[in-house]
Amino acid sequence: ERAALPDSVLVQVLALLPLRDRLRAARVCRRWRRLAQDRAVWTHVDLSPHRV
Image (cartoon, rainbow, N blue to C red; front, side):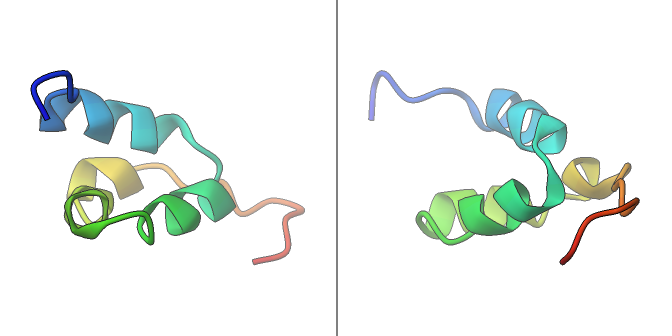
């Protein structure tokens, strides 16, 4: 856990992922689920021609 990225960095990374990958990331572990629910992750969601 010492080598783990800070929560703030992971939130920024999650925010850059496509929608489907954000949803998948939320299933990795409890920490990632909590971070994936952060408002900053969902400020921009591109729903154009994607199947959800």
